[in-house]
Image (cartoon, rainbow, N blue to C red; front, side):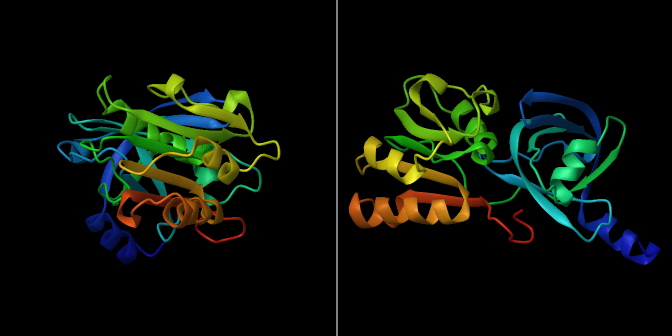
Length: 229
């Protein structure tokens, strides 16, 4: 990378060092990044950070699993076949490696005062859902559905016993949401594969009577789409 471009990028990002890396599910790895520049950021549950890959010209987005105000960000990174730049980075980065990332951002966030919280998604949605669930009190009304490829892909989410779980075996997420039939009156958080997210939103708003403003969506991946591989 040209030195001038590198210096410009350095002014636009936060700098940290990977201090911990461990598997937390069959295809998910926990990465802890620490640094003085990461202190005092105050992300909202569900927000994300963009990490610069080695070239500096490629960004990949990861939900914040946990944040330490003293200066640490924890990410859960999914490994998958046909690795793109993000999956390759998440698989190979090691403690001691420098990491450059942008400040927390995004509108896919928890609405803490909602009367009912409905979570719908797949493995890729679980890190964001984990941060949201961890911020809710025990008395919160929680329901939802998560789909994974295998049982070993399930993350240890807070309040996991209040969610319905299924394996990716032919039953669609949309069908499962129809069976769940969540009544309007709360907030639905729908995330995962882009087309599935759109179909679930259409069901909730067109058939189930949900206000569009009460359905928050985040497409985390799409087959063959650059940047969302």
